[in-house]
Image (cartoon, rainbow, N blue to C red; front, side, top):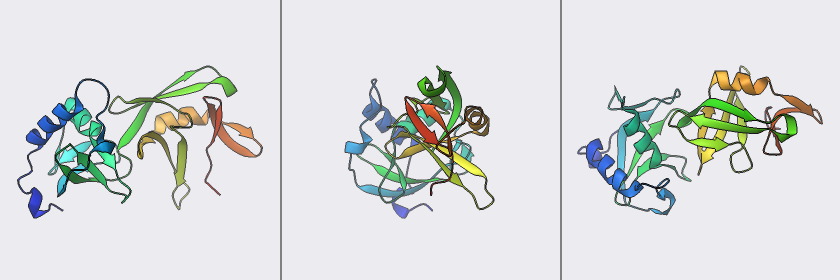
Amino acid sequence: MTDKNTSSFRPDLFAIEARKASGKKGLPPVHLWNPEFCGDIDMHIKRDGSWDYMGSSISRPAMVKLFSSILRHDDDGKYYLVTPVEKVGIRVDDAPFVAVELRVVGKGRDQILHFRTNVDDELIMDSAHPLRIEFSESGEPSPYVLVRDRLEALICRSVYYELAEMVEEIDGKYGVWSSGQFFAMEAAE
């Protein structure tokens, strides 16, 4: 999977560039950066949200958070790590993040659902961060919430069960309320 262009890829140097680009306030503006594509690297985000490089787990949470801050999902459907000077492709099994925690404020139509991801991104389910559910051929649900810029979090099973306990029926559709909006928990027609 590694291009000959990236045989000299050094994650430590890439991380230094990413850290410089990220700065201290908020996420870096990866959507504004258009560096030359340098090829694919053997970095992989598994369905459980864990990251590895060349088959070895990236065990430092700070490194995973740093790389996640420069992750981009482009219109071509591929995932890239991007700095102002470099763009490399990586593999993602499903979604790059996992929603691991749910906090509910309020009840019913007035409730607000707050999620935290495995890399400590926090978001509120609303029109900018909608719920989406895919169903496998066996009927198994895979629920997702949009984190940012085409980057989704797979909602872990325990959090999905918490959502399922809040399901209401509205006009024959089953779903949950957040931020004054009803989010269906059924397959799209």
